[in-house]
Length: 372
Figure (cartoon, rainbow, N blue to C red):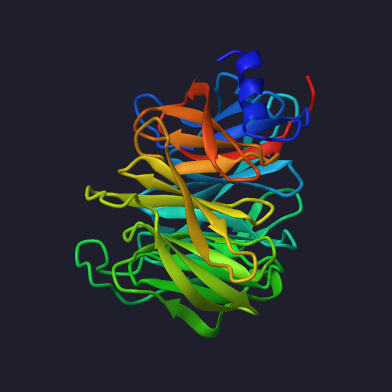
C-alpha cells in the first residue's frame, strides 16, 4: 500500500493527525533455521510504515523483551527447557543494534516474561516450566546483578495434560509499583506479591485470586486508571475483568475472545489496554484474530466490539504502538508482522496493507529512535 492510500485509511478511521516520530521496533523470535535472535525495524508513526528488519543481536529463543525506562538497555529472556537465561544489552541509539552486557541465570525453567521495577533497581522473571518467579538486582549500568528473591508456586488444575503443575506465565507490576501480579496457567490463579526493598517478594493478602478451573491464566494488563485490570486466560480463550485496589483483585466477569460458534482449537496469547483505557485487545492462536472489547468506564466490565483476522497464523505477540494509532500483530507461523490502524473512537482495527517479513515473531517492543 502506498503512503497516499495509507493516509486515506487513517482519515477514514477518524484519527487525529499522526505525530512525526520514529521508533525502533524490536522483535523477539523463536530461533531456528530462519531466525538468529532479536530483530529490529524502524516504525514511522506518521505513515505506519516499517523498515525491513535487521538482526539486532544473536541470542537463543528471545521470547520476551523489555526495554529499560531510560532507553539505553534492553533485556531478553531465553525460553529454554533447561535453566532459564536473562540477557542484558546496550542499545546503539543510532542504529538500534544491541551489544550484550551480561547474562544471568533465572534459576527457573522455561523463562517467559520480564518486568522492571518502578525504581529501576530490580528485574522480575516468570518461569513457566517450574511455576516460579525470580527477582534479580538491576545495576545503574544496566548489568544484571545477584538474585534477590525466588518463589515457587504449587498446585495443579483440572486439565491433567496441561495443568499437572504450576506454570507462572507473566510478571506485571501495578501502576504504583508496589505489587506484582503473576498469572499461573497450571493452577488457575492470579498470584499477587508485595514488592519490597530491592525487589524482595512476599505474598500479598490474599495471596491469589482463583478463577474457574481450566481457564489457564496467561497474561495480565492493568487499566491506566489503576482501578481495573484484565487477565487473559489462554486455555479458556477469555478475558477476566477485575476491580483492583491495594494488591487485591475482585473478579467482575469473564468474556470470550472467540466468535460465537467457533469450535476449533484455540489458545489466547496476548492482551493490552489502550492508553486511554477505553478498549482492551486480545489475540487468539487458532482463530488467528484480535478480539476488541470496549471498557465500561464506571464498572470496568467489557463488551464486544470486533474480532479482526491477523492475516496470518498464530499471533502469539502483538503491540499497540506508542502513538496509540496502530497495532502490530506478529504471526509466528506465517513469519510476518501485519500493521493495523486503530480507530480511537470505536477501537476497531483496519489492516493498512503494510506487512514485513520477520522469522517466527513472538514479542514486539518499541523504543524511541533518534532522527536519521
